[in-house]
Amino acid sequence: MCLSPEYYAQEVRCKLGLAGPINIVEAARDLGVDVCEEALEGSDGILLKVEGNAVILINSNCVYETRKRFTIAHEIGHFYMPHHNLGKFVCTISDIPGYVPDGKLEQEADRFASELLLPLHELEGQLKHSPSIDTVRRIATHYGTSLTATALKVVEATCEPRSQENRKRLRTTNPPPECARI
Ligand SMILES: [Zn+2]
Image (tube, rainbow, N blue to C red):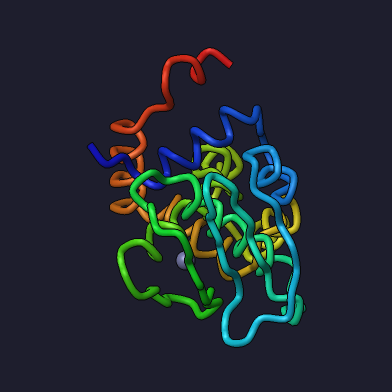
């Protein structure tokens, strides 16, 4: 059975004992993945897997720390999800609102990254009232996510049909028992 990207992101947070905002480079290294910066042509990030070793290359020309964080989280998704079993991923991350990445694996890696950096259940706990742009800004600063990615996640958490769908999705993908005890 193929589990959801959100499940795998929660599993990583659980395994590494992460709560709230995370140091994404440390999280990658704790999973055995090195992170390096290099000037890349035409991509934001690359995941290379060779004989059990893995390295994430991040484009040093990218000036936005939030975008670099999202890219690292996206590449961790490719590394961690068992059915993403290719030796190499070359990825371009878009900040365009409503952008839908090409291909199922890219969409899954984006969903994984979003949940790893900003878990839906933590976000819902902070949204007792209708969110304002100041709320979105505060959450984005706190979690080190872009305003766009945060706003999309806030919509996901508060828009009723999507929210119900998410709750159902998360219910069917509860963390494994050993994590639930943490
Ligand atoms: Zn990708």
